[in-house]
Amino acid sequence: MHKKILFLKKYLQDPQSIGSVIPSSEFLAKAMFRSIKELDKVNIIEIGAGTGAITKHISSLNPLLVEIDKEFCALLRQNYPNLTTINGCALEQLQQVDERFGLVLSIPLINNPFKTSFIPIIESLYSRGLLQWCVMYTYGFNDPLGEVNFQSKARKRFVVKNIPPASVWVYS
Ligand SMILES: C[S@@+](CC[C@H](N)C(=O)[O-])C[C@H]1O[C@@H](n2cnc3c(N)ncnc32)[C@H](O)[C@@H]1O
Image (cartoon, rainbow, N blue to C red; front, side, top):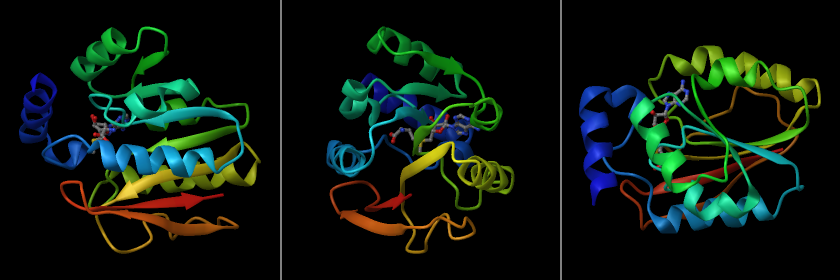
């Protein structure tokens, strides 16, 4: 319950950056995990880990966690001491990547200025062969990374048991 209250508090402070009133459901997290398991095994970076709702289900894949909020980071470090958690902006962290990786993304892109800087960074990482795949969820119906020239893209799953219901998109 503590995680839900903290999440709601953060949402009220910065709705654009948090994007939803409660963390993702276990059903959405499991759908993300299933999609990731279908992809090539590479190092994983999870950006926007929040209170760890997705992390909990993908922790066995040893993701590097990036989260901008200090309090969320403290919680992630406490709950996942074996994972590396970076407190910082995903845009800066992604620009430092120099090896092949898969990206798990749960930073809201709808009406978020983050997207303007994020798209060219993703395009550059993908064209340089560093970004192997990206798995993300969205509450909207449109392709959230439509601007990026991925070879393959699909709305793989739709999860009703989440507030709000969400689609899982997979890009590679
Ligand atoms: C929709 S929440 C997702 C939280 C969690 N992954 C989940 O699914 O419940 C978005 C998260 O992205 C984080 N975030 C927003 N902008 C960010 C940025 N530029 N860099 C890193 N994290 C960011 C927020 O602090 C928040 O924890």
